[in-house]
Image 1 (tube, rainbow, N blue to C red):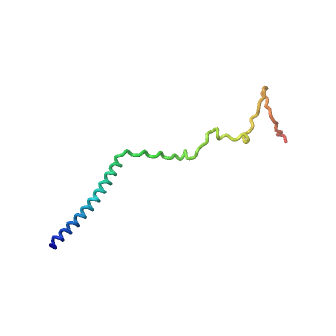
Image 2: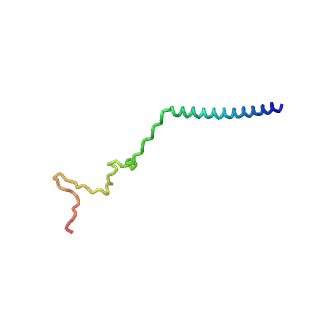
Image 3: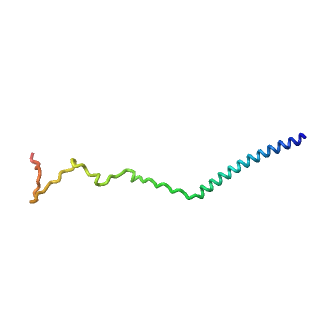
Length: 92
């Protein structure tokens, strides 16, 4: 009778170990299937590389012009081709 009880306990222990192993195997199978699905999906497009030469914005030529106060005044010409404007005395 005692031997039978011992066998029952051993069988119960082996059954519990088998159930634990089955749970681990199911989890491993699930992980493997998930990895397989991810591997079979098309690869994501790589991000476009950053170009250093475009890192500093260059303003358009129209924005690079100096303000009117800093630009030299263009001489105006009358109908006879004579320059109109202030004369600067260079003899001084």
